Length: 230
Image: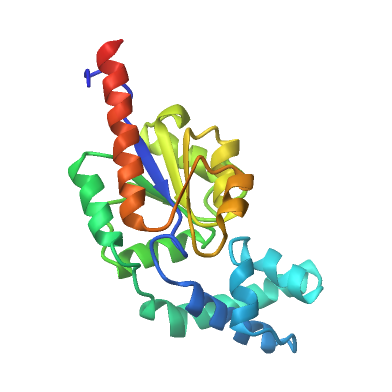
C-alpha cells in the first residue's frame, strides 16, 4: 500500500460480539426491573438487548420515560457492583484482536453501554492496547442504531467509512453501520439469526470470531491491492 493510500479500520460492538455479557446484563436488568415490580426473566430480556437500556425497559414494561430511566440507573448500580467483573470474552476474541493489531489495523469500540462502562469492559478484558477509542451511548449525540457514534469513532481513527468495517451481533449495529455508509458490515450470529442481520444491513454474516478475522483481513488486502493498482 502506498503511503498516501487510505488505511482500513474496524469498529466493534462489545456485548454479544467480543464478550459474553448477555447473561449478566440480562440478569442485572431483570433484577432492576423487579425492583420496580415489573418481573421479566433474564431469558426474556436477552433477545431484546441491543437498544439502550432505558428504551428496552420502557418497551417491555410500558412505564414512562422517567421511570424507565430510573430502572436504568438501578440496573447500572447492580451491573457495575455485582456483574460486570464476571464477564468473559468469547473464545477467540483476544486472538482476533492480536491478529488485527499485528496487521496494523486501527480499531475502535462503539457500544450502547455508556462510555464509562465500555471503557471498564475493555479494561477488565485487558484490551486497552487494541482500541484507540471507545464510544458509548453517551459519547456521541445519538446512540446506535443511529450512525453518530460510528462516524465519531472513524473520525478519531482517521478512517473513512468506505474503508471501514463494523462487527456486531444485532440490528442496532448493522443499522448504525449501514447509515454511516460503512462498507463492510459483519453480522455475528447469536442474538439474531442470519435473516435478521441481512435485513438490517449486514454485508457478511458469520458464525464465529475466526471468520470475522478472515473477512476483515481479506477486506484490508483487497483495499491494498486496489491502491497498488491505482
